[in-house]
Structures are given as C-alpha cells and as structure tokens.
Length: 197
Image (tube, rainbow, N blue to C red; front, side, top):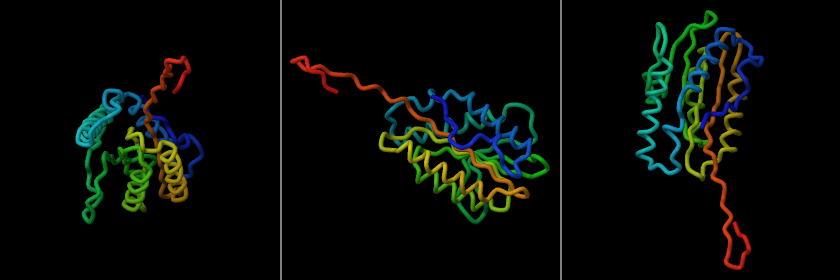
C-alpha cells in the first residue's frame, strides 16, 4: 500500500512556485515513499481507539523520517496554529525557499471528504498572507467512506488553492490517498452446480 498522488504534479505551471519550492515538495514526496504503510494501516478492521494510536505512531515515525539529515529547523507535531484557536497542525515546518519564508503543513486525514474539506478551510484561513505548502495524506477508513468522494473534494481544495496562489504569496496543495486493495469475491457453488456470487 502506497499513497497515490491525486493533485496535479508540482512540476506543472504554478505562478510563484520557484525551483527550490518544487525541489522541496519532491523531497517530501520521496520521504513519504520511504514509509512502510502496511505496517500501520494493513488491518481491515480497527477500533477507533486503536486507530488513534496507530495514526499517532505513524505521525511520529513520519516526523522522524522527515527530520533525517542536516537542517536548521525541525519538523514538529501538534503545533498550535495561533494563540487564538485550538487548531493544531499534525506536522509543520518552517523553511526559506526562493527567498520566501514558507510554512509547510502536513495533515493526516481519514479518507473522508468532510474531514479533508474542514481541515483545508481552517488551515487556509490560518495561513492567509503566508507562502504555504499544504499536504493532506489520507489513510484508509471504513468501507462506508467513499474514495471517489475524497478524490473529488481534494480536487476542489486544489482549485481553491490555485486561485489563492500568486507570485508574491505562493500556495501549493498536495493531496495523496491511500486505498486498501479490495479482496476479490470468491464464487460459491450451490449443490445443484449453479455458481453464485
């Protein structure tokens, strides 16, 4: 199980997104590829309390992988957006790219369109006026959670981010989804020899 990039490739035309920012996004996506997702999200049925523990473990392990190598700033978890709200970023990082001071946010979301949208709106509001790179990395949920619906709403988030993006204050949204492989249904055979699904 590996996350699939849903949004347009970051190499595509983005006003204001400089070469260093593009390389940084590429670097983060490469780090995502180093995670062994099956170690965390392989089980098809997980109790909510257990899933919270799994996601926290994954969050901390991802932070440690992102922090490998020399750097002056470090990725941190559960960072409060500002003093006036309780919202916390799952992972955040501050970095200067192309002579602009970026805030980078990674949110770990269930495969639910409402959660993706809710977080996107709040995080966008918190970072208006700041160069921002925002990743949403969605992990598998229950069978009732719609994968196509998530793809659709990630597309909406990308459209909004693109409209807010400009040369002076660049913004970039990256959406990734993990999808569990569906088990193929076995054909059962009745005693009379007629096959049924």
